[in-house]
Amino acid sequence: LGGSALAVLAALEQLGFSAISVAGRNAAALGALQAGCQAWLPALEPLLWTAASAESLLEALAQADLVVNCTPVGMASAADPGAAERSPLSAMALDRLRPDCGVYDLIYTPRPTALLRGAAERGCRTWDGLEMLVQQGAAALRLWSGLNTVPVAAMRRAALERLQGP
View 1 (cartoon, helix red, strand yellow):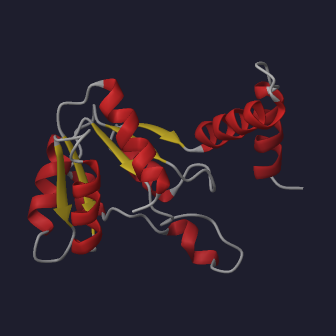
View 2: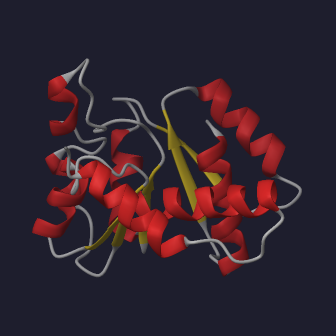
């Protein structure tokens, strides 16, 4: 599990989420994540995402207030044109989401992702990762330049223009 997943976990902890589940396909990576976060995130519940444990994941999705995709599944790619049509959640998994559930996909291209389209069709609130990308760039620019004010609106416009193509 990567840095974006850790950043999301830290944000959820700061926001006061009382229960946080992380689904992953690699038991060793989930165990390492739980061990590494236990001191500051004792409520973390790892969910192994395998065919044998699919029902546990579906139950967690049915109870979720927020689902965050921290994987690259569904990211548009010139090398893999079909990637943009993939979703980390199956239609059956999406059907378990409550309409008041929020779904945040850290991916920002295509807009919307297959995950966000599927969630929106089920009445969920959705957000893509563009603003996170813009704010990461702004934070880096502040660090590198020493400036407190950076042109976030211009950065957002430039990112949107680039994503819309030539």
